Image 1: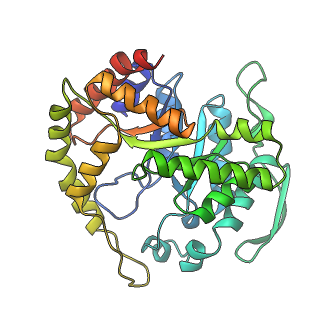
Image 2: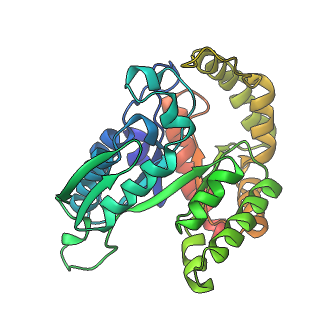
Length: 324
């Protein structure tokens, strides 16, 4: 909460909240719940979920929550959704493995209908129910002047060509992971555009949707690159190892996890880790190569609250002016 308040004070545009279940490095099990609190504690900044794990929830329940946050915040809420993984979460919440492996498109389409239509019924394989009224309707009230987006922004986390196509055909922007380099992200953006155009959307509409793409990354601002990397090298491998080892698959399948030290080193090479000028140059280079101008940057890699807040303040005070 303090970091989000620091981000608003620093002049940043948005704060994004991850959702994890039953693992020690993610203590937020409901991104929409924490988003509601942060929207109440802030005045200007946008709050988004990165992501709400769609297979683990009923799309209508998530749609109702998103609509409520959209209305009460004056349109400051962004709903990021993703497929998640084949984790034990699916067993605990009763969704089953099929919710992850085959029903994500059905869930996404039902969620979108709920956010855009006045009445919704479903005859899907996973969700079947009679038509009911959408209450509250996202477009009923936007701020005090009656203007603003009719429904909350929806962003889809994409890690595979199939999900890229899914998002493109529905005209939804992508959230691309921090493990991808600029070349991979540029390729996914190009693939998304080709699928969006092939689905019959006109180039102007495609361009508007593409402006919503988000690039996830890591940020650590220090007076030198070495100093920034040392901060992350001391802390990140430990909490990454603890968290990655805690993931349990729902069906006992073996999952190869990243080496925490090498992953930390990779992220330091790819993202704005170093002095302000280096950080600004890396962000600008990614934007130029990929066309993405929105960044969701993990700022708490140090594992220390005071250091995280200082990192956020420096990002706003020393990096943002260089980008402007």
